[in-house]
Image 1 (cartoon, one colour):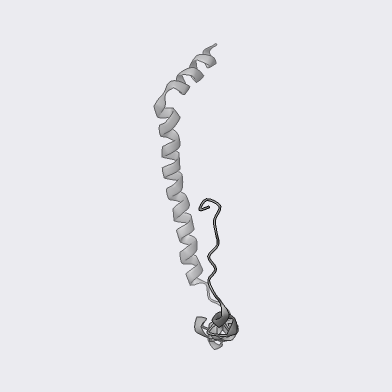
Image 2: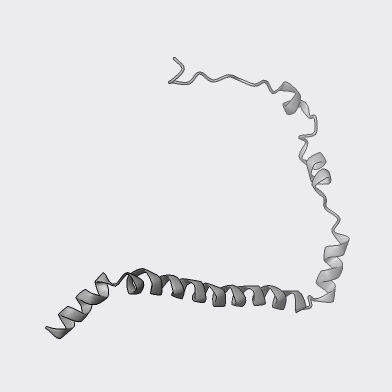
Length: 92
C-alpha cells in the first residue's frame, strides 16, 4: 500500500517525470559529444603507411577527368537527348 502511494506521487510530479529525463539527456549528450569529438582528434594523429601515402599522391583522379572518361561531355547520347513532358493524372 505504501509503494502504491509513492509511485502515484512520483507519476504526478512533473519535475521527476519530465525534468530528470531532460537533465539526463543534456548531461549524457555532453559526455557522448566529448567522446565522439575525441575520436576525431585521435584519428588525425594516426600515421598512415608511407607506401600507401605514395600511392595516394600518385593517383591524380579529378572530377573533370572522370567526366571526360565517362563520355558525358557532349557525346552522341547527350546530343540526342530531348526533354519529354509527361502528363500527370491530376492535370487531366
